[in-house]
Figure 1 (tube, rainbow, N blue to C red):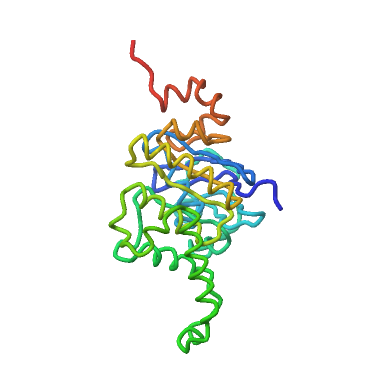
Figure 2 (spheres, rainbow, N blue to C red):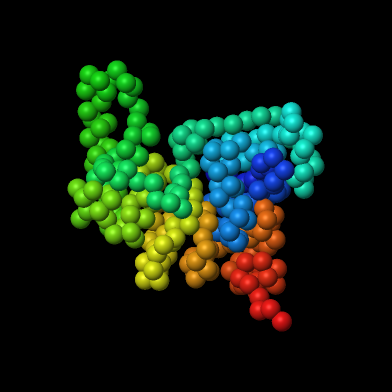
Length: 279
């Protein structure tokens, strides 16, 4: 097993003349909860999009479980216009689509809930289970994968019990209270059997009680499923409560790295993210 489940090396994402993520170097150990914070527009979601294969980096590399899953370098017009901080340009192109990265063991939720809202709670989880289905189209067409399908259905039911959603099994996903929809989205990510769970603002739109429950839920699923968790979040109480280490971005650049106490006391973080009183 690798000491670091996820690493980025000089990861830079430039759109035209705008550098959204600038020379990001993160190392996420196995079994920890790591947070990425910063003000709106700091580049947090862009970083997640590069890591999960939505974008190919303009420069730098992403290494997951010891394997380079993304790497690129400025070329063509970008080679002339590249303004990222790190100038040690990489020399090869490696890319994987989000579905391939999911099968490698990385699962993600989104700031805006993306459930199959017209389907049931159970069906949402079962569909995610199918990302690892072994049977081909021909086997499925002729019903030759019944044992595998039964196992997936049983595992989906067990997962719903584990996350406390079994009472909502047959309910339409859109009928769930907001906090439960968030929990279902995490459950659907867990159904892909991830090693790394990326949560993009999981507490967005939640009231204080729901946020407190979510904090306990994230810690419990991390332990139960032996996960590593990487999250973006604006709720500082949740971040400080559950994070082992925090990276802080501002205008795409890393301005601080440390444990919750170090981040709370960092003057650059207070100025850029938490705010300071004007004289």
